[in-house]
Amino acid sequence: MNYTKEMVAATLGPIVFVAIVCLYYLISSALCALKSKEDQVNRSHRYTHAFLVTTYIVIIGSSTKPIHYFKCEEYALPDGSHERYLSADVSIDCDGDEWEAYSKYAAVMILVYPVGIPLMYYVMIYRQRRILSDEALVEAERANGSPTIGHLDFLVAPYKSEHYNFEVLETVRRLLLAAIVGVVSANAVAAPVLGIIISAVFQWAFTKYEPYRNDGDNDLSVLLSFGLVFLFLAALLIKVDATSDAERDQVLLGALLIIVLFSGPIMLALILIRDMVLIIKERFWPANRGDGDNDGVVSALAGAGSATGGQAAASADGLIHASFPAGRMDFGICEKNGRFVVTKSSGVAMEQGVEVNDEVVQIGTVVLADKFKDVENDQRFNEVSRMIGTFPRPLTVVFAKSPGCDVESMHSIRSLSGDRPPSIVVGQSLDQEETDKVFL
Image (cartoon, rainbow, N blue to C red; front, side, top):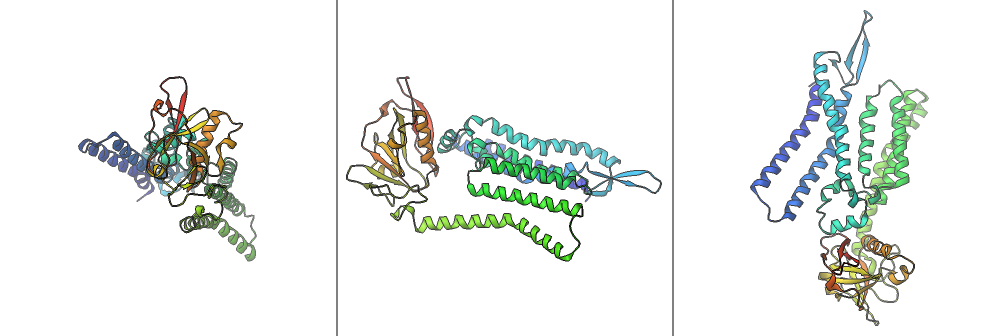
């Protein structure tokens, strides 16, 4: 199989596969009508997720093949004339009929893969920018089953809301390093220099913006970028023959390259070991056994006792100390005049004595009255959302038997479901004079 056939297989194969899956989806949707719209949305999200995963996997290989189809090398003949042959396959004449015919196909595939896929990512994300750029709206969506942005989780879930479109840049980075750099002549120093520039720019971006939600992912991205810079630098030194011919120097350079190449996998292994240790620690030594704080955030509430095993701890002052493990929290909250009052209680919340009109007075170790003394009302709700959505579980929330807003004037109140953190929707009170905010 020559390079032309390889290119056609690498570019046409994924298109045929996606077309077959889409056809199956359409036929099965027509023949097997789902019972609810929610089921239809979930099914659509699953297929879209599979499609995005497919594009992520094939983009490098399917982009490199057509790009390299335009990389030809010129050879001098004994009679002084020159002929051009494909660098990847010298059996293909770049001035021949086969190359002329398939070069047009390669140009179209360049528009489909290295241009089309990142552009598709950008358009899909840009259309939902209002939700994706707001962490509160993102959490509200996820609490409600992600009916609007669920199909984009593969592209946006790893990133912070302020960097929701970073996957587009990451895709461009992969393409630049894997495909564009390879087009440069193998005999020139431009390839390693270009690789150093691209890697250094993205290393700066990873360091400055820290786009990932997980700190370990940010550390790993910076480390791998440094590794690529050093790798291209070593390639440049070899290209310009700046390395010594002494055996000792060659061994030293080889050892440094091995360290650089394995630094990423070693870092990843350390992160996995750390996560396993944290999981084991949480499983066998939960933070709320009264043996101290869990990284200074939540274990026992000062002077009030803690809740363990899903049971509320009652105190002499009548406060309810409810403990919520990972998963459903089963209570809704409205905000009015700076107070956060329970609008709905069920499941694990009701089992611990939380009732409608109870007021939230403390989250973890944070007393809301002290926290919000000098904070505007709008900022209060966003901060409460951040605390409940980001504090590690088990999370202890203190409720007081205190009247709050008129629950009967609220609507659009839905219960928290799944293993998602609580989030926010906006409802309008019946008197139309002020907006109430609701936790789900």
